[in-house]
Image (cartoon, rainbow, N blue to C red; front, side, top):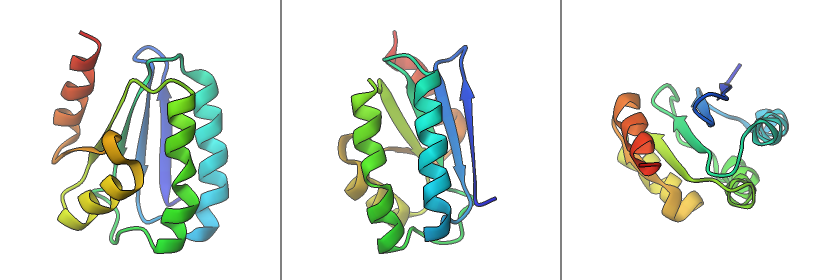
Length: 119
C-alpha cells in the first residue's frame, strides 16, 4: 500500500501517511478520502505525513489529487498540516493546497499545531 488513511473520530481528525503515490493509487485514495470525510464533523483537522515517500508527486498525480483540497473545504476542514522534511515537498504542497499547507518537520509538532486551532 502506498498510503494509509486513518480516521480518529475522538479527535475529529484524519491522518494520512504517504509512501509514494502513483496514478494507479489515486482512485482508491480519493474513495478512502471521501469515506473519511463522511466520518468527520465540520471543523475536523487532518495531517498528511510525506516523510516516508521517496519522491514528490508526479505532475499527473498532483493534478488528480488537487480536488481533494476543495472537498476538504466543502466538508468544513478546520485545519490541515503536512509533515515534510524536504523543501521540494513543502513547495509542492503549498502549490496544491495553498493556505492549508502548514508544514512541520515532525508529526508531534503538526499535531500540537492542530490541537491549538480549537483553543
